[in-house]
Image (cartoon, rainbow, N blue to C red):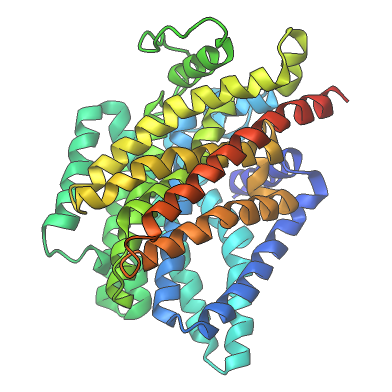
Length: 459
């Protein structure tokens, strides 16, 4: 228990150190505020409780998947941010404690920490809603428990995939392929094995069904997972870039030599694409809508490239660039080139995979929308966070600004994807126009971001 409590303290210390000190304490309040406003608003708009609960489970499971990718990051990003120091998660090298025990404690720490930090405020907001409308608080408790289960499932599945991938990439591709065939090519009800199903029909039998994938993925993760070592690998795959793009070349090589290499970019966007596809199917079935899949996929995958921005800046220390005769604008343009070289091909691969289940001609417009939205996301991220993109996740003020800026583009595009069936001559060209304008805005604000952040770090 002492190791667990120390890990929780370390997690809080790291977050407060990285994300604004005492301001980080306002993050749970921001989650509560968003949930307190959003849950009643969705109800007033006629969105059913089942749809809201299903969406929450998907989002929380996706959060778990992202937390689980710590296996892909290794210690590379932590060293870039914090310098040479020993963290508790690395203590198996110096203390008489096994790696698997440390990993189990680490996963339990994440479950307790994020359940309290994010799911706790959400549950309190839902409890306030339940009291106002006069529904049972037992439903709120059940939701909190199943959301914690969804987060745990996301973490263990992510770790299991990383564990299999580090042993054999071919085996990982085979597992993903079999799962995709099972989901889209058979009538097997995978949702019955998720925590959301237990929320809908709590019973001993459904509890056993839900526990099965948790146990299986957990066993695979703990049996096969190994910590990624620090050593950098040669990145001979990176093509020679033209003279004048040294920042882009350096960034691509850093990502390629880091834990998980460039595969982590494709993995992250693949997870985002899978969640997007599932949401499109569920929303279309529940609401009877004819969704323009290309507009929706292009928009949501473009937003998902925020994770790629984190990868291309994970090794940067802003102050180091003061030593070079490098214009701030040129620095960010080099980062943008590396960002596009990683994000766009990966996004297009995911878009191509989606053509196995959605009409290919409907997805073609996504080829135009995806890069433009990605450039906009890059510009917003660079302007608000500079070379420290993780600050957007937990710094309340920046998180709110980032959400508002991305919503300004995402909302009209998503609305157009919902009404494209009724306005086929207007919605697609309008969506392309909005995305193109967003891309131009992204380039402009990225050019402004370089001088702004280098000046701030110089001070």
